[in-house]
Image 1: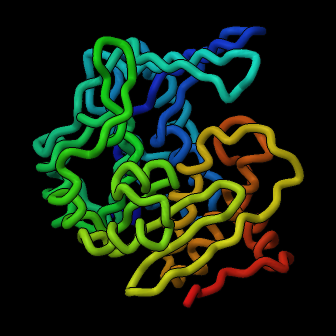
Image 2 (image 1 turned 180 degrees about the vertical axis):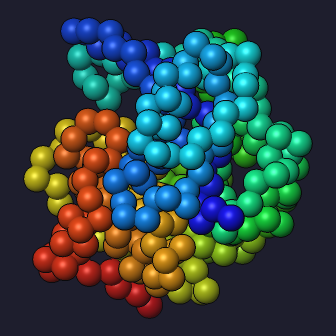
Length: 299
């Protein structure tokens, strides 16, 4: 039995800037797995991914660290192209290849206390997969992929067509402010998390970047601070880092605000460097202890 099992595609990312073109692996499963390796209790963690044989080097690197990785062979690897202009806020994105979706048959043998689905595109995980895994453990879902649809090579923002049915089976849902607005039609944070909770989600995590995050659970709303970084270097993977921190602490029996604070501290450390989280558990705990910012319940 694994404590946490992350399921998702490792991607090949082509990043084009005015100065250079870089190729690197990415995706929720990549950032989650490399990050959890740096925490104290990662031995009962498992990654299930799917990619083409040409990108197996990404898997070899994780296995060399002692991470348990199961690969479901795919004809292709998810291949994202991100093109940035001089203004880094201006980005065009294409999907040059898609991996095969995950199916119930390929996941039936898995056992874990927590399952985290790192969706990248809307058809990565079907409703059947969500329903099935919800019977096997606590199911956590990152909503981002369900709100992206590929037509040709272009990525289009979409609503999650099956959200009302699917969310009945989701225990923990992670959204950012934009995703919450698309799903609920509301830009009022309290209203958005309340709606998602009404639709069946037990723990709603709403990340707000430098404004911190909100956790709505058991009819209570907690505000989690964002701990200021020494410098902002790279925000890529911060949401995945937040989720790994939250699930890691929930598995250890931490309260909701304690888990949120740890997740926020990990994200701060990750923000200060490029690539996946590479700090330590003690560094995150020190940030929480030394900060005047504390989680609080909002009445």
